[in-house]
Image 1 (cartoon, rainbow, N blue to C red):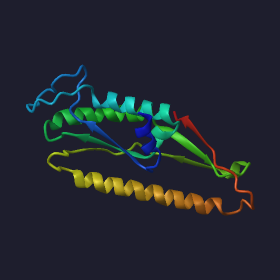
Image 2: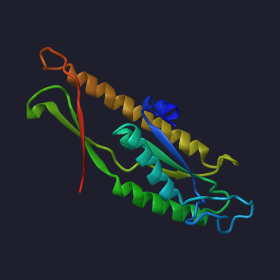
Image 3: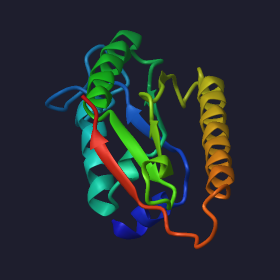
Image 4: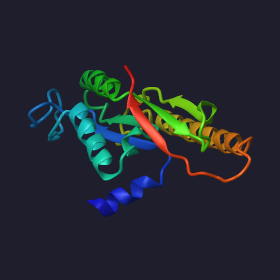
Length: 174
């Protein structure tokens, strides 16, 4: 519940780990012989997760993220279908984020938009493509750290005093 969600406020980058074999209606996924029971399609699960994050803390679902579709070793065709469906959900959620650096004029507004997060797939069981996930996660964390450093440096210039808390506003892009 909320105690668990509290841990998600600290990370700079989120990783959504989804069952890549999910199918609408639940049951045993087509073509899988290990008896895996999959309740929902990955795209539906991702949408629900993002909604829950927003209900808990506005803006949390818009943090930089990666999506990992697991169980690709069991049926790669199914995972590719799931990837396309997840991509469609992420396109619906593309947002542009504006960060105010404390100044009251137009020059005090910096615009930043996040691109669609990488959608990766592989197998936790076999370790297939885990290295790619680690590489992309490292790259995302480094990018966020660089952007935060640049924002701090830019905020320190020219404001002439006072501090001012940074607010944020998010709007859907069209």
